Image (tube, rainbow, N blue to C red; front, side, top):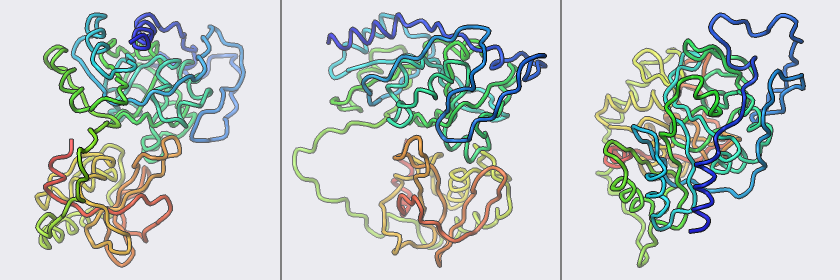
Length: 389
């Protein structure tokens, strides 16, 4: 309990004092470089941020605190109204809760794409991200200075290259300071709280809960009972109860999987989209991202697939690549900022080939299977797919 109290005090009193640099968030029509400002050298592109080139700042940016203890997030809670101290105490007092972190959450338009975004305190939020991301001082200092950090998939596949400036709706521009997959489901961008509030994000409507020794589903139910109606809570890195006795491996009878007719329909639907452009976040019928193509094609066969790659990863049992059949799904872990994250999916076509939507600037195509960073092969079960949330 003392640890919870300390964490809560830090969350409730850590008003962000970070000031964005004037060249980071700009008014509509403002140029990227003020008259007389020195040209900026372009840093070498790496997945994690490098320190910004030194130049005299017009305003002081408070240094980001060093990384201390990592906290594994287990639940992500979203409310319609800001969290109050009373609501935070209700959550903090629940058995098993070790640490809490407030954030501002909303969907914003970034480079013309609707992106789920968190505005955070870089000094404290970093402790809840994957170790590689959390350890990068340059990344979090750049966020504090006003950059946006985007997920590896949005950056690499979605065409948001490092260090370029991207439009933010009608609110100016932000510099892409780093690729940093946070591990919070569909969240694909992180900014500082100052930037978030300049953009008009709701305040204190998101809460990250670390409870590494509590049953996550049971804790989720308790949280929803104590918070206002309309609150949403999703599991992140869920902790499951220990089985009381050894449970035999699940048996998947033949009837659990897609029929031959369903597989034919799904494959024909997917191949009918050859040559259509990749667009990050697109779900068809004319443009697709990798998981959007899978969802669209399998829906034509009557299979209700979840939307994103890490959800599609659990839509059936894994099978050895040597036993892959047409219609199975292939998955990769290509994200250097979160090595355990499933970041790409393709449909196995057969004969060592796959059909997929690769990345921005490319099109839906059939190519030889690449086994580099291959995470595994999943045989889709319509029943399992429909239950994934």
